[in-house]
Image (tube, rainbow, N blue to C red; front, side):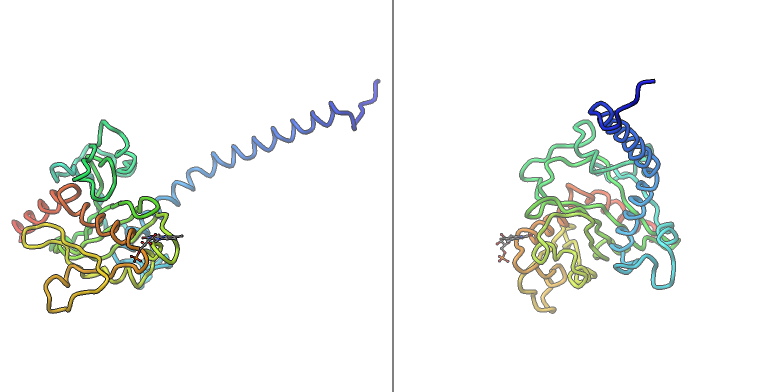
Length: 269
Ligand SMILES: Cc1cc2nc3c(=O)[nH]c(=O)nc-3n(C[C@H](O)[C@H](O)[C@H](O)COP(=O)(O)O)c2cc1C
């Protein structure tokens, strides 16, 4: 029998191809088997962000102050799909799999915004979005809205939480942005985020009025209720966040829904 030359070019090539094949099978099966876990982690992360915006989960903690887990806390929320054009709930949307951001890039289920409408620089807005509601028999406690808007380097994605009066901010947090650490990236600073709590949203005409300012007005001035400290050295990010909040709580965003919710609450109360 002819002896195989282990050092031959053909043998080296064969071994290299075999190794590549084995490695690609291992990598692909790992990727397939880890997919459900990745999905679960993504969902858990989203729940964490919603709970943090609502002030129900301390930053950098995975349990509440009274020891409740993310799943336990999130179970207090009902997720609903809302038609932003009418403010009505939509029941034929699978809220667990619906992605409002992806919907915004589909021309069939979103709308192109005119430059006048597009203060948050979104270009398109989905027709249907999601809301996260925490309610008790006596009424709504918190409403969390998914929000996004352009800063300096890209779009900031986050959640805005409102208190039960639907006119006071309970919290704001971002889960993705491209702003510069130390400048626009200070949107993640816990002290700055805490400064959003208690800020009022709407004036007597029902228009969102939030202003990010370099110098806050004196407390006795009624406009002080709508003011948040601007981020120093980050005028573009600051303006982007202000526009984002006013866009999503205004008529182009969840305005119709919030008005409807408020009048329902008044009717019930
Ligand atoms: C490297 C670099 C990164 C910057 N990152 C940001 C940023 O993330 N957000 C922002 O608003 N401005 C950022 N700026 C600053 C802007 O270019 C601009 O100077 C600033 O927004 C003006 O803010 P001021 O009026 O508060 O000084 C950055 C500037 C440089 C040079």
